[in-house]
Image (cartoon, rainbow, N blue to C red):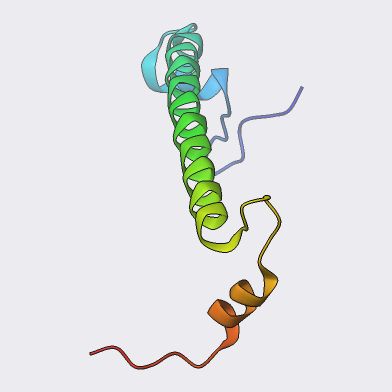
Length: 89
């Protein structure tokens, strides 16, 4: 077991820290459990949004740079990516 007394200060982590600041030995559980649920909700939202953007970009790429049979029109893609573009006004 580590010594929390560092001379000029105390070093508390995890349950010991939350108990020190609140006086509640179970506060770390009361805090972490709701945070875990909220993090999962946010992660689920992110995964859904991320998937939608991947689908959108894939469709846009296919519509713009693929031929009717699904193969990539490499000439068109290289021209788009590498050709000198006319300045826009």
